[in-house]
Length: 86
Length: 153
Image (cartoon, rainbow over all chains, first blue to last red; front, side):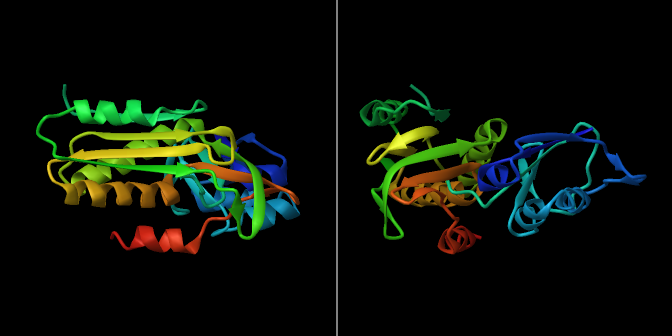
């Protein structure tokens, strides 16, 4: 299972804070962040728009990373808008 | 009395004088302390702001701030470093963030403090939501902040 978290405006728009998803969806293994992103984008219009590459950044196991990163069971993935702290 | 690294993500306000004192007390061989404090402004993009909410990714914030500090320490010879970032509901003119750095001479402390803020602005998982007269609005990341962070490469 993968734990997926959402933050900021993205979280508000898709009305989802946290999801657990199977590594295998419809016989296809979600090997990379890119594949998880694409899979989640199919969940609806707002998901498609706000999870788009560039619009949503990604962290795996609490480290900012890129879409080509390979995932493993029990990984925590977070999608979020560009950060605005400080 | 020795060099320290302090990271805190907290709801409560911080006492600047207290944080400065800790930095000053940490070493007799550091001749420079540089501090930065970020405050909640009452106007942004011509809209009047009545409050600010800071959301964050709890499991990641300390990790990210630690990484920023480690990167700064690899670039400059530093003494003590302290970062405090508030989260939750804040009011206009409230303190949001404190970054304090000590070094033997001022150049490292000045540069490292600016570097830390530039990277915090692009790498630390916080998101600001403003309360305005026209409702609530998520702040958008600025291209200028991305550019500033890139300039350090």
